[in-house]
Structure formats: structure tokens, C-alpha cells
Image (cartoon, rainbow, N blue to C red; front, side, top):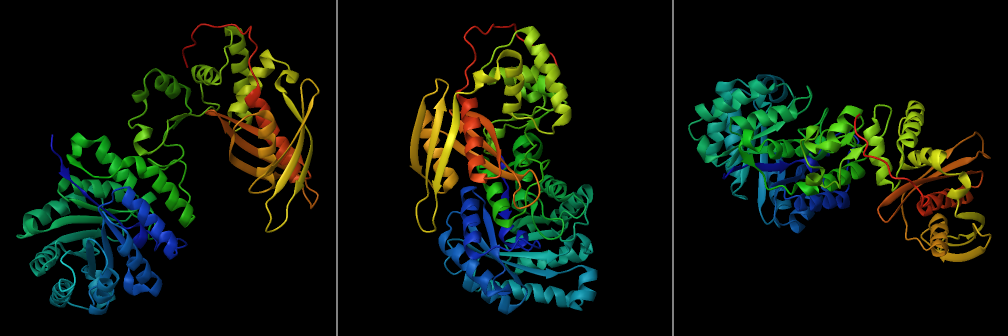
Length: 519
């Protein structure tokens, strides 16, 4: 079935950047624009050129470099704004000037002090002036959701006659609700005589938490462009989140009957980039891109998920750029999920051993919020193996040299379980990296350090530091810990702790057990 195309207009770099504390420099904006182009966004609103020299330069550079997406610049219904936008967009492959003007009674009387006829003249004059520079003109009647509908339709008809190819209906203050907003779009389609000559767009804010719902209601009613931002960032409570809109349309394609050209596998990388550069971290329970969006802890959910994924999952995590869903082990988890994790770690337990491990697991889960692979390993080892069996190498000594402008170097001495000493020296990006490289050269492992944290365990300048490292080798991930007043030395102990867990092998006489089912 052939589906209608919905245009995705991304305003992360304009409305999103207006969010307090989210200011981006030119290089950061350009990097995000590149990622948006990779995402296959139809239109990138790169900024508000008249707002500042920095905004002008950002729009200009993005317009010069980015290809494959239209580049838009925002302008008030003023000639100086439109001229600035036109200059910034000169090198764009596909430029668009986005003109806005308030139309609601509140804005007319208190912000602009203009009557209805003056608003219509300002709007049409601005669109006609913009057409001198650019054929693709979008017009937004600001605060449209609170504008009298008869007057709103009059303004829309006038700007289309003046040459606007897109008319955007903004819910500027997040006042609308889905049924009402969908009906507004339907009324515009029915009452604007020339509406077939323009694309209806919507731009929803999240003040009442309904930006995405309002946008989707508008799409269902006939809007064919949605303006949104990555992670939903933006003024006040933010904008409609692009990832939520796109995945809703993809997941419920038969209901909405429209499609986008977005490469959804780029959603997560784009989300992480925007979060990193703006400093706005994504909440754990955020739809689509939150850490918990594809995580399951409930024992009932985990049991159903293990039997058939779509019992509790309506999307494939790979569709947004994740590798797989996560079964989070916590106090709500069941025995089936624990058994699956133990199997993934390469161990086989008897029924009695599993029963004992599960009982210990429940006790530990009440004490710890997050349980990691090493926690499960410790429970297994408690039941099956002595502590001595775990240790393959002991860290005897570390010697580091570090000086500004020179390559760091570290020497380590390890003792294996046979009492043999091995020494190695290696360079690295820093002292910790040098230590890790030297240890790897002795153990023969190829490891990747994916997380490194230091936490003070006591008070004062002589406080002990607890170093936690997370290491991956051959798709196996473990966590290591080390404690000491010397943080560099503690880092070595943490890394060798992780290495020993990676090198640990189950005893060859481990017994196989029957399949374990049930929550």
C-alpha cells in the first residue's frame, strides 16, 4: 500500500536551542546538522539569522555544507529579518524562509497593538517580499491555537494567495488538546478555499504534556508536515519529540496511513549527540530514547518477553539504533530471567544451585538498586567455586610516569596463580590507559574500557577512592573495583579485578540442568 509522505521539519537548532541553558556554538550546531542530515530530516531549521551574528553565521555555514535536506531560516514579518535570512541561506541547496507573525487576540492587542486588517497586510507583504529571494516560503500565524478560527482561516488564505507554500499552525503555548487541535486542522482544510496549494504544518509545544499527541491528531486530520525537535527540547516544557512522532507513525502505520523518510536507526545516535552537546540528559523513562524504554525488570514481563518478545515490546530496539533490549535484574525479576542471565554468562547450574543463587539474588536485590553481571557472578561463585579459583593474576606493583606534553608510560608487574612474575611497559593516552595497556600485554586479552568512575569513600584530602571500571572483551562485559588512597593504583586494582572475571572459567565437571521456566 502506497502511503502519503509526512514532511519532518526539525527545529532542534532553532526552537530547541532557545531552551534556557542549551546554547550551542557554531561547531556544535554544524555537527548536529550533519547528524540530522544523516537521519534524513526533510527540513532543518538552522536558526534565526537576525537574532545574533552567531546565529547568522551558523545558518550560513549549515546552508553552505548540508545537502539532501532543505535548510530554513526564521524571520519575523519584517523586511530586515527576511533579508538577513535570505543572505544566510544564499549557499543552500534548497533554501526556505520561515516567516511568523502573531494572530491571536491576546498577541494582537498586547504584543503588536495591531488590528486584524493590519495583521493580514503585514503577513501578505512579508510573504511577497520573501518571494523575491526564495521560492519556498513558510508562514506561521503565531499562537494559532488561540486565534479566532474565522480570522485564522482568513490569514491563511491570504498568505497562500501571496505565495506561501507551507502554512504552519503553531500551538505556541501548548494550550491545545488533541481532539480540539485535530478539529482545528479539519476546519482549516474545509474552510480555506486555496488550502490545496499549500502544505499544512503543525508546531506543538509541550506545556500540558500533549505536544506529540496534538501533532499526531493533526496528522490524522490531514497535516502533512510536523515540526519537532530531537529529545523534545525547546522553549519552556519543550517541543514535540521527533523520535516519538516518527516511531508512532512507523509502529502504527496502518492507523495513521503516512510514512516518513527518516532513517530510524540513526535516532539513538542523534539523541545521544544532542544530549551530549546541550548538556540536557534524557530522563530514564523517556519514550523511545530513554534508558528504560527497552528495559524490563518485572518478573512477569521478563518471563513473557523471553518466551516471545512482542508480549511486552511493540518496537524492535534495532529500529532506533540499539543492539537489543535489556533484561534488568532487580528485586522484581523472576527466576526465569536470572536463569537466562546465568546461561548468557556461560554457566550451568543444577536445580538446587539455581534455587540457592535465586534466594541470595533476592536478598541482594533488596539492598542494591542496580545489579550487574559481576553481582551475579559473585552469587554463582559463592555456590560453586572458592574465591581462590577466581584469581588468575595479582597486581604486584605499578610504576607510572606522567608529564605535560609527553606520552604517559606505565610499568606493571603481575603474578599468576603459579607464582610466576610477568612485567610489561606500555604507553597510553593517560596513566590509566597506560596501565590497562600494560596489563593487556601480559594477559593477552584485547579489552575495551567503556566506563571509568572514581568515588570518594571517606572524607578529607587523604580519602580513599573507589575506582569502578566497566570492561568489554569478546562481547562479554564485566565490572571491576579497586580501592586505595592512590587513585592511579586503585585503577590498576580495579582493572585487574575485571580481567580476572573475564579469565575465570567454570569447572569442567559442571553439571547440566533442565530448562528453567516460570516467573
